[in-house]
Image (spheres, rainbow, N blue to C red):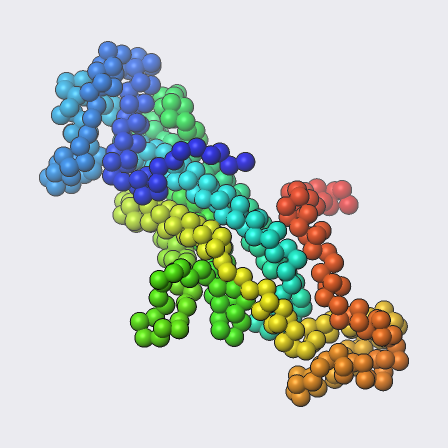
Length: 448
């Protein structure tokens, strides 16, 4: 169950104001932990808590000269705190503050994204049941295959979205670590117990080992998860784009009163939102590549990752947040054309039932290769000459000698194909996941 509570908008999480506030939270927690350990006077910490304040504008001004954002930040704090400021940043290096604060920002972002994923799941479940029994043609290779229902498509997306919730929950756990281990990770100036206390005060876990930084495989997992989420949304949007094609016409984006689709062609009603989602997915994938390249740094740390992260972390979070909101809205208002779906299902004059007919012949004792030949010769004739496949089958002497009229009708009955839709829905929405949480291979072999 996703925890629901009031969260800031995604953009607010990545403001300079919030970033510096998180830095201050880390600095205050460090002062408190050091005071408890007897490293810092308790009275000084009380003064620091009361007077610590920063100004984004002043930090920017100081950074023009100092060319170091953390020093500009602590200098601004000192201007407001006074003599007790000597205990701020005591025993810390810049990345102790920055990386631990990053965790706090990323957790906020994850929580907001998890809420957006849940909202998308709600829409997908609602529309899945709305169209559970709405028949349509399934397509493979872009070609009509066999009948299915529109609800199954929404159920498929629901299940994938549920996996994305699981992925992001795991990535969030991987991000929930702080580090106060110093310039190369050896706790030269503060003991590990201080780190543990600081992380506890911030609601984080201490990383078991770090260099000057939290290792970037944690960030990579998160960014790759965002890329997977974006690709799932792209999958949905691409399907909507296909449905909206003139030749298909099975569904289309809601077109509000007064909206215009083209400056030159008044008749146009284009899938612009779906196309926007597909385009943004490309951007998020690119950011994931940058995150992966940030894993390999020189020795205990260089700064090559920092500039990239200032772009990719906020942009990816804001981008996926936007994509999730727009995808939920897109599907919630999607205009569906069941009559067009039925017309497309019947457009090939019964050819999509060839597989069921093949099975009926096999069940009647006809060798599979021979049955395949009988069915295919009628199917190709139907394709090439535009004839009704069912009528050709009824007139085929070989087939009619093996199948009764009732058996042929059964093969061409869409209900035969869709008899397990309710069971599929029960597996997806009813908690029946027979194959989920499979045992490790070693256990499977042992049990076998």
